[in-house]
Amino acid sequence: MSDENPFLVRPLGDKSGLLALMMAHWGSHRMMIGLNTYDCAEIEALGLFSGTGETLALASWTMRGDVGLLCALHALKPGQGAAVLLLDAVKQAAKAGGATRLRAMVTNDNLPAMAFYQKQGFRFSGLYIEAIDHYRSVIPTIIRTGHQDIPVRDALELEIGL
Image (cartoon, rainbow, N blue to C red; front, side, top):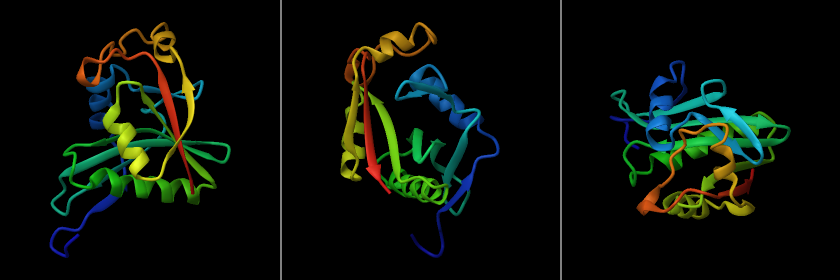
């Protein structure tokens, strides 16, 4: 980070960009973590912005007891560290809200996300076989194939202590 172009994390007042991104990539802005669903239009959202105001990453999260739940994390320009910076901000916000752990959920096709979260210290904590297949009965617009045309069927949960 340079003095000329500092990064800024701030809550999203207007979530339309995040919701559109989720619709494009997932087919819904409602997310499942564990066996609960969360509408990202109704929960906390943060954005990471450049010093010029360019959106670099977006995230949504909420709390359930003492667990922070990361519902979505999207870097608009992958590979530049924006997702790591925004993940750190979500961790700090969740910890300030009383969270002792942060949990994320990915689908079986999302190999880049699995690698990303593990590199950040997350560990696998749950496997929900056919969860996405069942979730489609509630939200039929969820994508059927994802990364490298892998069928989207299962959900994997990852968690990190705060």
